Image (cartoon, rainbow, N blue to C red; front, side, top):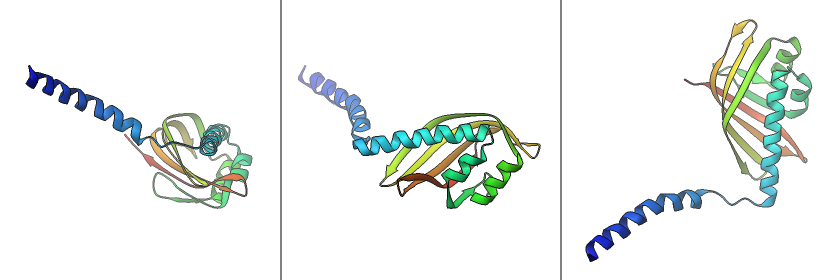
Length: 155
């Protein structure tokens, strides 16, 4: 009976340990970091809406002057490139469905990773499909700006 109790205790410990380790890995955020996270999530929502409505004004205000984007094919996109494409209406999005978004705060920097399933075209060429993306937001002078973006086609 003693041996069975020991085995049951070991099994219970093995079952509980993963649950404890998951809760222990989650960082404890300060109220300031929680507020920053809410701000970045709101910016991500605004960014999605701006893309759907081809809003160059949002990009003008929210992209850092030294912004660099990396497209799914490895092409480099500057702030001026992004503004030009939007102003000329070269890119059109029918839908952008975002999931699996994670925001991590590092001082005055936020790193966002997510999955996006898009339907759209660039100069009439369809680019619909699933993507993973990373966007880096930096808070400068009290204002969030997108400093970098990278997208990868997934399956």
